[in-house]
Figure 1 (tube, one colour):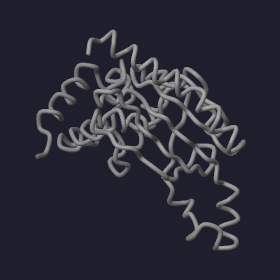
Figure 2: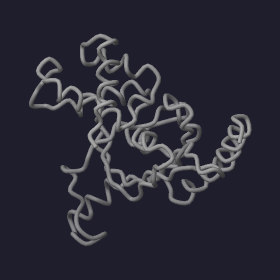
Figure 3: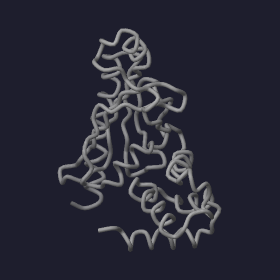
Length: 221
């Protein structure tokens, strides 16, 4: 399939799903948000959104969850019924369903986010609504932002080992491990992300490209 035909197919699938986005939110109400992503443009992947759980809008960037799916390429699988927290403290139950074309190529995702903050409060009080209580303090925090820069910054800060403190405190194996971890999470699939990571770490762009190259070359078997 040529690139023009492939893009046309992707556009057609995304266009067909846009009414589904509105329909799901109309069905489940204000605690539900549905987001449609086009992975051709990670920096502004949101092409349709209904509801308001994460605060995103059309043109917003994908989260680190989306970057992880993007890093999986055509081997990426659906990630269903996981729980995370927003930076603002909302407890969110989500499902990310990858979109594939007729050739099996992953090109986007349909994400459903449900705000279960109040349900979790009731669950914790009654201990019975939906099984075991959701351990809020142990739930990972996910950054949902309009811009990809903030998502990349959070991923760098999260994966820089806290006990070492700064880049200068890391030895070479730990530096390579940091770049390998970021690469595995799809960070470097985003344009200009190498430069941004370099700035965040306080190193030169050339050094960042060098460490990324070495990390990929020395990938553990």
